Image (cartoon, rainbow, N blue to C red; front, side, top):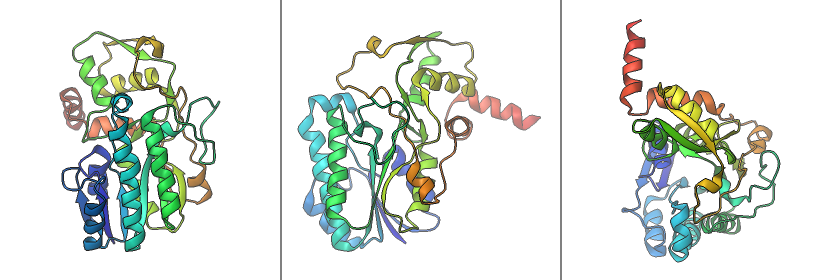
Length: 295
């Protein structure tokens, strides 16, 4: 298939390219190469490429900064998604829209299903929900893929920040009252690769299975990286004031994946360990791997 990817310079975009490139013809567009907010550029680009599938991973993702720059956020995440959806419709392409757990307010007890009521708390969450609505209104063949707590080889994320801090500090404070589902971008890319081969259109929750707090997430990061001498101090989210309100609980239930008999993402703990041992460019992990190879 011909597959076009927006946001190809991001951590998910790069893992989509490395996952899909072996079996497909890939047209990967970074932000510099295609500004999704430019309606004419989007229309002309996809009219020329004539893709079978468009994976729309481009987004404004600076959650706190978004509160101060709402016009810029909506221009990219809302209007830009409208432009991509129109291009998908005009070219007859399937559209994969990458969305977020931040479309929920976090007040539910238990994990969110695809059918649960959305109620974003932040500008970022609201703009991404607008993108979902444009996708639904404009396209007939679409997959809305909500995901959460992304980390991967090609970007700064919670995992890389925890490791970096642990190299400099002996005590780290970690939020213990926010819960979600950490997601390895390579696993998400592999799921999307399987999804686009089907005609099972609709909304999907695609995160690595299981739920944890940020504190528990950090515990496993340090253990996997061999940084067991670092002490974690559990604190409330009030200890880290932020411009944007985060949902307290944004765990995702993958009901649509189960109903449609699609391959589920694996549990979050083994996914994290694989990422740290195989992808993370960290000296302590490399040294440990070298020692293991000598056994």
